[in-house]
Image (cartoon, rainbow, N blue to C red; front, side, top):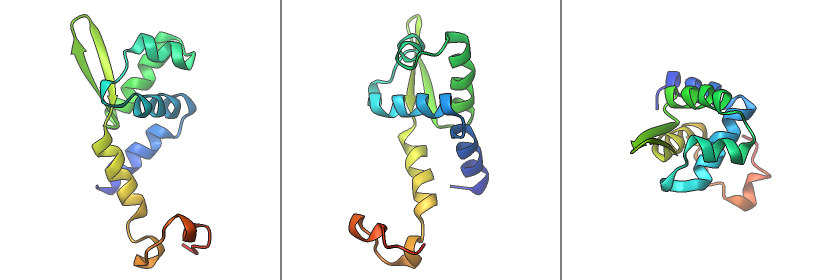
Length: 107
């Protein structure tokens, strides 16, 4: 993943409503959610949610697909995993760090 994409992704997630929306879509899995269901779950007005979904889409963190009259939004697990991979690349100077050693990691 290129640094510009990492910055765009992190900037998109650096807002409470967008982070909550992204996490809800991750939990929903490959089935995704419609904007109305997502708005209800998050307690966010539809027009406000639309703005946030656009930002997440522009950052390539989510995708949208039209199914009949509805749009379905899904987390882009490929982008998410690439972002996590970028952030953890060379963690602990290349030494293995599992759950037990993470708390003592000096990285």
